[in-house]
Image 1: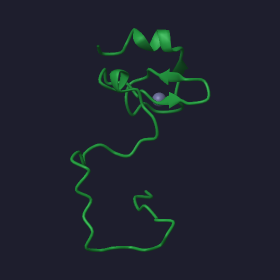
Image 2: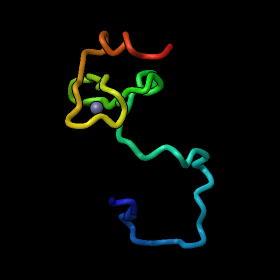
Image 3: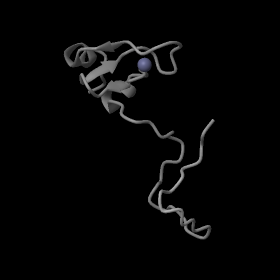
Image 4: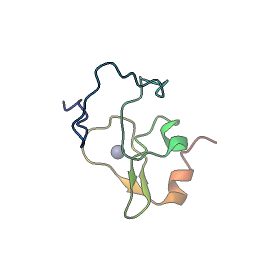
Length: 77
Ligand SMILES: [Zn+2]
């Protein structure tokens, strides 16, 4: 897996600590709907259409994006 972030400036500071990230358990994901993710869903957001994947989290295969109104049905409020 590609777990390293490459800084565009190239200036690495080994002694620098990222203290602004309290939750280290959450992996870096592009865009997810939190209310849908809380329902145990993939919650991946297809940005061009604004649709959300409502398949179970870590589902195999491609995402199944649905309308925002349909995503509301599985979202946790
Ligand atoms: Zn998905």
